[in-house]
Amino acid sequence: MQVQFDDQKAAAFADRFLGNLNAAALSLMASVGYRTGLFDAMKGMAPATSYEIAERAGLDERYVREWLGAMVTGRVVDVIDQERLTFHLCDEHAAFVTREAGADNLAMFSQYIALLGAVEDDIVACFSEGGGVPYHRYPRFHGLMAEESELTVISGLEEHILPLVPGLVERLASGIKVLDVGCGQGRAIIKLAGLYPNSTFVGLDLSEEAISYGRARAAEHGLENLAFHAQDLSDFDCTAPIEEFDFITTFDAIHDQGQPLNVLRGISRALKPEGQYLMQDIKGSSYPHRNLDHPIGPFLYTVSCMHCMTVSLAQGGEGLGAMWGEEKTREYLSLAGFTSIAKNELAHDIQNNWYVVSK
Ligand SMILES: C[S@@+](CC[C@H](N)C(=O)[O-])C[C@H]1O[C@@H](n2cnc3c(N)ncnc32)[C@H](O)[C@@H]1O
Image (cartoon, rainbow, N blue to C red; front, top):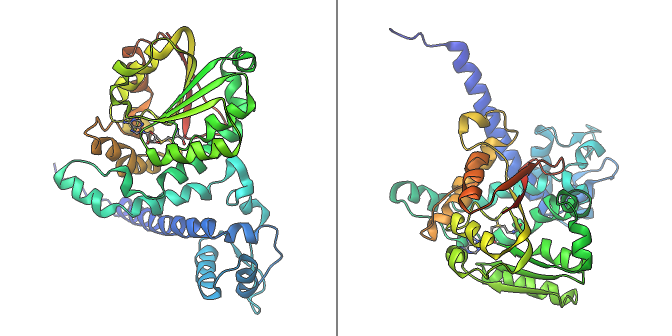
């Protein structure tokens, strides 16, 4: 049977694809606006010329003017006075693009578009040759991840995240042993160590660079109850200390491990019998067709392909990918020996599920 070419369907697709092009370009410019401090400079500013905006932000006017063109046509910034050509960032938009926006800060995430674009050639080569792109090809990764941690973890830590585990706050206050696996620069564990001086904290991560940064920050804060160690956790199932920790956390750190199941088995081994494991990991299904209504589905599969999956493959690892999904998460947690798995969703973090897990 010959299927008729549907002109309307084709035109709608072309429109949508053009929209994608503009949205992608706008994300790149939003990243520039965020990093240069332009959004922050424009927040609360009366309508102003490109010269006034550039002066306030301490930037080159010619670049600022071109950036404003993208922001105006992208409907982020309004032109107020067409003769003087003045520009304005309204409060409703500023609420999502400035550093003050806290957990609502969407412009922070736009930085990933540029970060991933920088390794496009490497990824294209991997499509032919297999293998992966190692962490050192992403110079800003750990810093960016730490910024994300401020938004999805630190901003909700005391109010929303710690209360997910019954009795945890009281136990942290009286003194327990805590491990953060795949801690990166360690923003979360540094915050916890400061809040709970009677407890002791350990952060583990593959990256020497991220661990050194964490150590330096912990020293700046005068934290003596926190230790960082650089360690490849691919064999954590065999190397983890036995039943040493009362509480273990992973913040978006399982899916991009070389050997995620070994890491989960190690966490199970390191946890005391009554201990609890809190896992923040990407929200979604293991099946793409079940993620059609996911608010950031294409974004997460892109981050996965161009970072999370490939950095794992570069370690000779499994390449699980960020979108391993809830079904696979539950399967791996069961295989690692966990019997109780409670999933939570938090309004401030649309990107992740929060699992409270025990043996
Ligand atoms: C997405 S980042 C999360 C970092 C941190 N938890 C945060 O929220 O900022 C994943 C972390 O897993 C670490 N990682 C990847 N493979 C690893 C391995 N084989 N052993 C130990 N850590 C690993 C990376 O270095 C990275 O810091």
